[in-house]
View 1 (cartoon, one colour):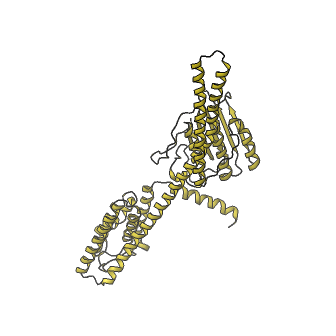
View 2 (cartoon, helix red, strand yellow):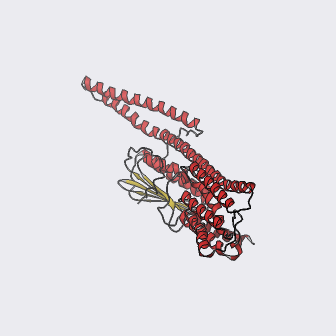
View 3 (cartoon, helix red, strand yellow):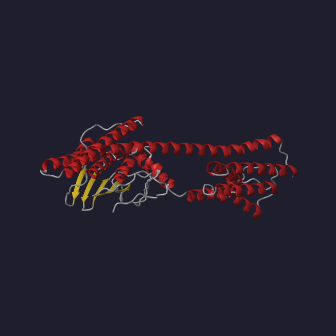
Length: 432
């Protein structure tokens, strides 16, 4: 097969697989249950099953068919209610074997139900395991009393098979839990590092204002002849307080630097902080580096914003352009700035393929530990920058393809606490 034919085919398969993974677990498991049910009555597979006791001699008929369905239909909720699914399948399997119906593929549902319970049952796992063991012992004794020719080693071997199915699910559960912990720890480290970096950068902004307070207080004291002694003393105290606050901020910055270095973060160089005036240079540099068409579109009367807002906007655009170059090389990018009296509206959109498996409807992307700690921490950094000035942020697939980052940064930054991303929040706040 030629490369030109393989590429569209591979892309279609990946798109289909991504679409299937995005479906609900109930839909996926319902399709699995329907496939097992069909296989239970399909001639090529119907006679292959998981038989215990060697008492099979009766054709299915209506009762046997009902029991076969009862061993496959509960698989539709194997992840949503794994304990219930296993209980129903196990009871139907036991009755099926005791009644001596001929083997059917439906009995394989017990293996799937055991695996699913091992992988998805949370609390009372041990109680469920002991209950299943007791149930198996009762079934083995009943089949032996009914004249089963199985030997003790056969009962034990079959039990080991069931334990292996449960154990496989438990192993997958442990792996998933370890990966979730790794992602959570990675996200927490990235958040700490990003917040320290934001604090270090905002230190320069705040230090400038505090320095101006000290300078203006001292200037007012010296430039006002005939000022009462009490007034001069108050101005002198204001200057002293401002200088003391500046000293404490520098000590805090030293602590932040030490924490960032301990966490493996790169300490920012002491260069003048960028802002909105430097966006043109940033866009030009990104255009030269990528060779793609990158436009800066400005609308509304250009006004001067708080330096912290300008810094946040610059960093968000910088990260958005980096992500576009990394994930959509060669794609055209539009950087839009819309000035308003109350806020700065920022939008960065590329015309690349967009995130794989992304929903087609904008606004359905969410900030969760999974997608924040995935292949990097760019989205996390944007989020922290936005929250630091009390703004809102949305990232996700753009209508018609590509990826978009939208932020609304208030003209007067709010004192916003840096909140943890919550799995309870189904989506980020959308920019209007």
